[in-house]
Image (cartoon, rainbow, N blue to C red; front, side, top):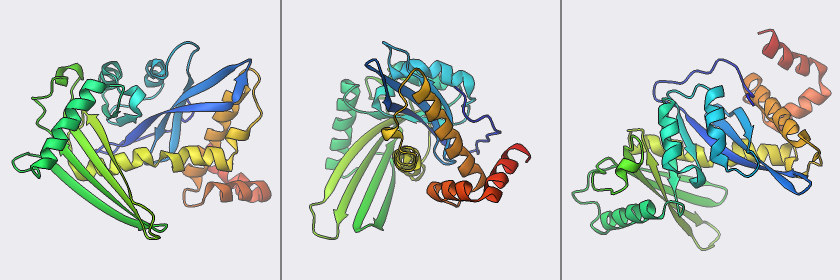
Amino acid sequence: MLIWDGEYLINETGKIWLVLTLTLKSANFLGHITHVVELFAAEDRLVLTAEKVPDKTVEKSCLPAIFKQVDVSGAIISGDAHFTTPTVAAQIIDNEADYLLAVKGNQPNLEAEMENFFLQAHAIKWEGVEHSFARTVEKDHGRIETREVRVVNDIEWLPQKDDWKKLTCLIEIRCTREFVNGRQSESATRLYITSRNNKASKFITWIRQHWGVENRCHWIADVIFSEDQAQTDVGHSAENMGVFRRLIMNMAVVVDPERGMASVRRAAAFGAGYLKGILGKLFLG
């Protein structure tokens, strides 16, 4: 279902659009759990479209319908590991977009080859290994987060190279989180494949936007709109209410992007003038 049909421009460097899987916990009608796949424009914080996953199928079966509804040309399509398949990568390329896909256990051979390569490169301190590197350090909420991204373009050695349409780069991101209160530090390594050729400084931003979707979309739906506690579970009511919530989220972002969602809801509920202003900007221009 197309949710946002406004003019949507992509800058020349591309924007990151996320393919998300959402479980509507309230939509448990007669024992059937409803899953929805959404296309989310990370930088602009807009949910562009949503499709219910048909019964007895998987999430990636919704992608052809999503790509028919939204022109994704020029965008970077990112998704969790269950979207990391050669078929999905080919669909994205065929729609004139680029993919940025997480590599985990669902592609064990590819994951093993990438892990082995990056471990060996670290062991020799990347001497003689051509790559792009970027590092960020952020201090907030009593913790220090360091992210190091390395991008490798020379992938002729990769046995799975020809399985992935237009595969261009391999990406490793190492994250370390240190706590000022003395708690034990945490670290994680994530791997990605992409058809977009760019520097590590770009990828570190795009990958950060991928993980930031929890705050920009899911957290708002769950906390501000109490989606997980919703009791609508008959027929298509849960899906319909999910669409209405995302329409409201989109309206607030477009009309009043500097104000938080909770503040927008309060202002619209208690101020008739504010509500009329939102509707006027949207429907009257």
